[in-house]
Image (cartoon, rainbow, N blue to C red; front, side, top):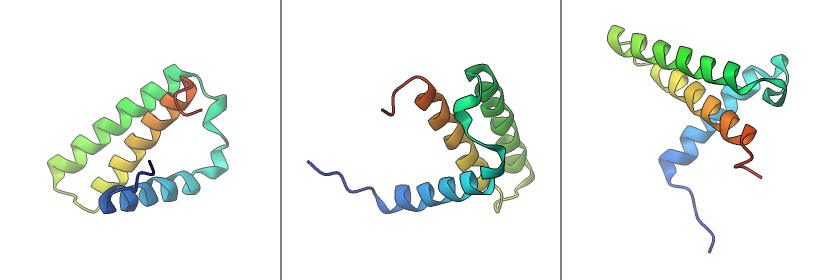
Length: 82
């Protein structure tokens, strides 16, 4: 059974991909330790909370995409995306 992504998921995944491409200069996440990826995830959660507190709505989707990307990287490290 083929699953079609929901419209919002498709749009959000494009933001995720855009953020990954903006950071391609850093190289692959496969060279990073999961502890580093987890620390970055927590840092980005803090950044999201700050954006929400300040009412900076423009940055919220970007912070959410960064968080989702770190979650994806950790899942990839665990072998869940093979």
